[in-house]
Length: 160
Image (cartoon, rainbow, N blue to C red):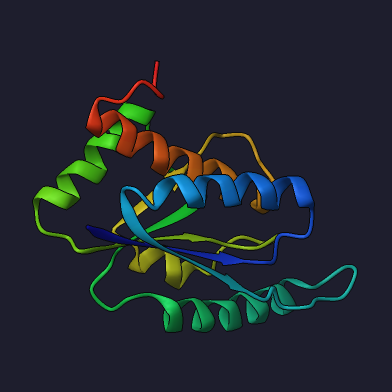
């Protein structure tokens, strides 16, 4: 069974996001050993300077790297990443599994995204859409798409 780690900067505060994420975490237990890691978002002033944002992202990047399994194939979620259909993501999950990748990791940044070093170190940069979403919603969307991907690979009825 594959190990999947989802590293998220920021805590889910809204109950509706937490409930949706918990549902997909539960469903994914059938397909993988899922570890959901929440890291604190760095505090910034109301109108941070670019230098303050850079320093905060660098600190978050250190925390992210500390939580990534060493052997994991890492995917960074970022707006400039590639878009993939659900079927393409499923094929990717399947190919990683068939190549013997025992660990996958997905990284979702906070309000200001991910530090460039995190993106550069990732095997894949993935974008959910050219639109911008709150990072809390991106977590739910990612969990749902991972679940959908495993369902597609299994030939399940979830994906229509």
